[in-house]
Amino acid sequence: MNIKRAKQEIKNAVRAYLEKDEYGEYKIPEIRQRPILLMGPPGIGKTQIMEQIAGECDLALVSYTITHHTRQSAIGLPFIQERVYGGVKRSVTGYTMSEIIAAVYDRMEESGKKEGILFIDEINCVSETLAPMMLQFLQGKSFGNQKVPQGWIIVAAGNPPEYNKSVREFDVVTLDRVKVINVEAEYDVWKEYAYEAGIHPAILSYLDIHKENFYRMETTVDGKQFVTARGWEDLSEMMYACERLGMDVDSGLTIQYLQHPRTARDFANYYMLFNKYRTDYQVDEILDGTIRPGTLNKLRYAQFDERLEVVGLLLSRLNENFRRAYETDRYTANLAQNLKTFRSRLEQADTGEDTPEAIMRGILAAGRMTEEQRKKAGQNSRELRARYRRLLETLENYADDLKVLNAREGKEAGEAKKVKEEALRMIGQRFDQENDRLDTAIDTASRQLEAAFDFMEAAFGESQEMVVFITELSVGRYSVWFLQNNDCPRYYMYNKTLLFEDREADIKEQLDQIRDMQNT
Image (tube, rainbow, N blue to C red; front, side, top):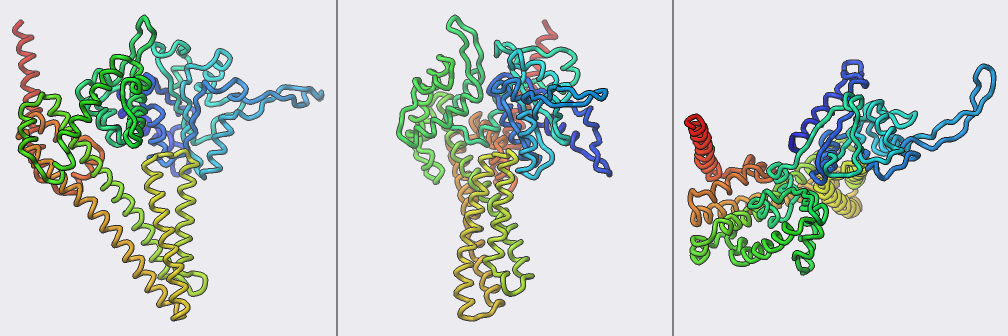
């Protein structure tokens, strides 16, 4: 299955394992909560989906790459203790707590979450001395004499033997005690994530044309040559940095991430074309509503790949706007919830210490604590971090403004009621400004989407390029959110006509193939 389906299967298992009855007991007994064994090629996002699942299910996460451990760190260090057996005192060997189990308890204490996920990566690549401990871990959910705490779900990941020479195969006894999920690399699924993660548009455009280069693993006379999803994502980050700093992106750079020389050279050459198209077609100008006859004429005689590249450039810029609108909407909603709490507490506050500033700083402190607990729980989404940093900065600015207000109004009027009214009025004005920013972000995205449709209609009409444009709008997380929450009649019109006709053509083609097979 693909990584998206695997993520959903793990989430389903988490929900099932953590379901409780009316007495607070887990409905699936601990002994029947099989550890999940996620097997798949390297670099397809196994670790990333665990971080996403922990955040979406509000669970703590402890993540380890087991190859970094020794037998002692995994099961604990031996020590001598004295015990009495048959009335005789004897020295016996005991073991300290496993570093991994201790980390689980530390995470529980730091985050305040009693339930979580213990993720062990590269579990089938351990040393010979550690291999028996890994089998014990999967079979008995323990390291040495210490069990994984109740409420913690074990997820392990490994690579099939064709990708790693040090892989050890699990025996039937172990496999019969785990829930095995086999994952394969699939570009169309990764692309949905790529839109969300902001992968460089040149990479997406290239892979749309050369899907066969998304994931490659080949054995040659020169050794292993490969390209992974991780390689594309890391290259994307470096490309953005190079563009900011004015550095070159050439085959000397791409081969550092795409360790398949032919693919690395091919993409480097494509990136040169991408920049040429970006300069020639001036997408920002198009999205501002300017359509030059020369641009349309150039596209009329362009190769199909070049036409698709222009569509990709439009989609990339539009998705930046959709993402900005989405993040602004989520931030504004979170801010509104905090300000609702502020209003409620202020209206109920007594005079004295319950000043508007004190109430706002209390809400700010609670927000910081929640953010710190989220970090300690291992929920490290970059998107959430940025959103909450912005929220906390805004709340701190509000608290500073309320401090000035309290000092001014308190001295001049000496009336708590007046201070409250002025505080509510001021915070209301500040929030109106945030709503205006949200409206601006949505208006910008709507206006540029309409301009994109104007250009698509003028350049391509109801062509295959328009089908690609509509299809891509229908799969991106941010574009889907935007279209669900904002009217765009032309999207729905083309979605209904072009995509239906496209599906109908596929069905007819399949029927023709069946008839041909029957006739031969």
